Amino acid sequence: MLGLLWLTSVAWAAAATKPEVPATAAEPTGTAEEPEETSDKPTDEVKYPETFGPIIAETAIPIDKGAFEIQPLFGLGFTTTAFTPSWRRDTAGGNFKSFGMEWKFNYGIWDNMEAFIVVPYVHNWAGDVNFPGPNGQTSANSGGIGDISFTAKYMFITETATIPTVTAQFTTDFPTGRFRRPNPARLGTDIIGGGAYVFTVGLDLSKYQPPFIIYGNIWYSVSTAYSQRVDDDNGQGVDLRIYPRDFVTANLAVEYPITKKWVALVELLSFWDGGRLFGHKANVPPAALLSVLPGIEYMAHERVALALGVQVDLIGKNTEGAITPIFTALFKF
Image (cartoon, rainbow, N blue to C red; front, side, top):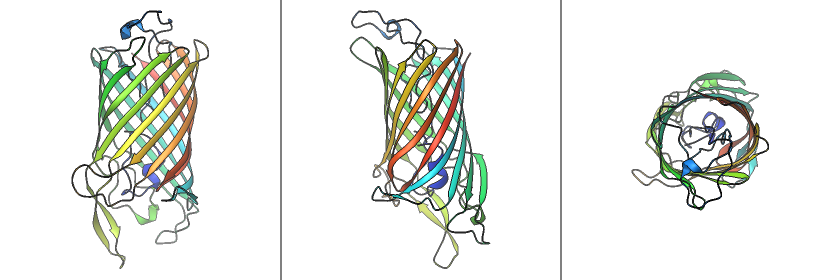
């Protein structure tokens, strides 16, 4: 699930529009050796250059059995626009920004299988808002733990000279971030989580086509219903039952090793809301977002890698757009 898709969407979209998609990044892949010029080789003989992997999109090759990795990720998103239902840009209604810090803990359970947990912290700021709070507040801030996610991945097709690596992924997001009974004086900054359990299944792919490494993700997510406190026409608080939409995440990333230490990266990230396969009909408007993320990676050490990028939200509807500088690091044990 999936990003920002990631920092600012949960903070500034109403909790009824879409749950946060955990934003994940990826582990270094392969070694610095070149691939052998033979056909139908298994994955362990298709040697990738040493890279960090995508910052937001997922890789397909799991880490080794018994290996352990820690990956912190930091991003500061500046909301620049509000996308309308007709895909137009409108004013954001104030000055909003959101700091996100995620900690990813990844472990190789078996051969070809890994599992990881992502624990996010989010802090939101609002200033010069168009609609003040109950006591005339025009600025506020709030922070807390966001929605924690757990992911298991299993590689069932190994890469050869002609076919890509293919890995199945299952993710559960838990509604650990605050979403009920927001304080009106906080101007929405205390909405940290999405409110629903989110279950995601999908495929991760990767292929080394020298000199490029290509990654792709396609995931389908379903969300449970939840209740949100809102004000009725008389200003009285009532509990409204929210039925979020299912959504599809589609990502594409390409790496280009410049040297053995430096790697260029570009990612195309997106989510698309649909209907609900199960249960009650959705009662929130459909949203969508398409983003691009150029970045640079530095292989500092065989056990330490760094990456820096900027995610720019290009087009969307019924959601907010932001510019988000991101820094992340990877430590292998």
